[in-house]
Length: 229
Image 1 (tube, rainbow, N blue to C red):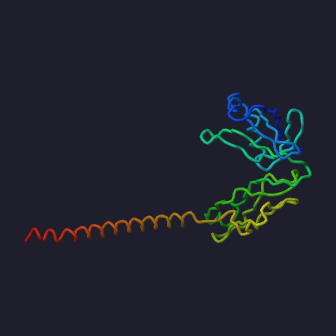
Image 2 (tube, rainbow, N blue to C red; image 1 turned 180 degrees about the vertical axis):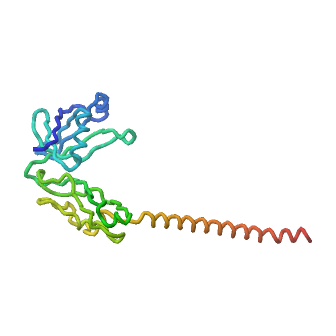
Image 3 (spheres, rainbow, N blue to C red; image 1 turned 120 degrees about the vertical axis):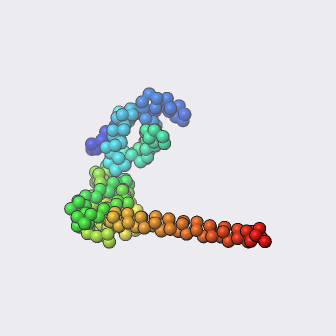
């Protein structure tokens, strides 16, 4: 049984008419993937937002659809592009013994204990989440990566370094195990390189301006000589 629960009412309104639901503080949604047809549903905004923030895309939710229990995962959340409010939610119906795919956050810990951190280096996480496969009860809330062994800018964390819990595997079998999850870099060195690059660009611009000025002067010289004659 999931810790996250949400009650959904069945929905009759579709298309442009769902705008009225949003004005009433309701979120339209759909539950698909069960034995029957997709079920059109709706739920109060605040309750739905709370559950979505808790479950994310990786934790099962126990839905109550008009009195009928159904375990589900959040598959898609549509947001208003300006207000960033929830517009629509798509749930995937699942069963407890079914292997499902979910998007799980990657959490890096203990970097502050590493030699890299003590040398004033910084870690940059470039892969924030990853798709995994497991039965609902085995889906992890996050993949935890210990970064305490990182030492220099030559070090980093790749997919092969991820330790998956028992019963969990990567959804993408073709994902390169050397794909970067996080890199170590020297912020002071990068700042110096950016400054040197800016100075080089400035020098190049000044050189181009001087060259253009010289060409203009050379073009004007014959005309001045003609006037003198």
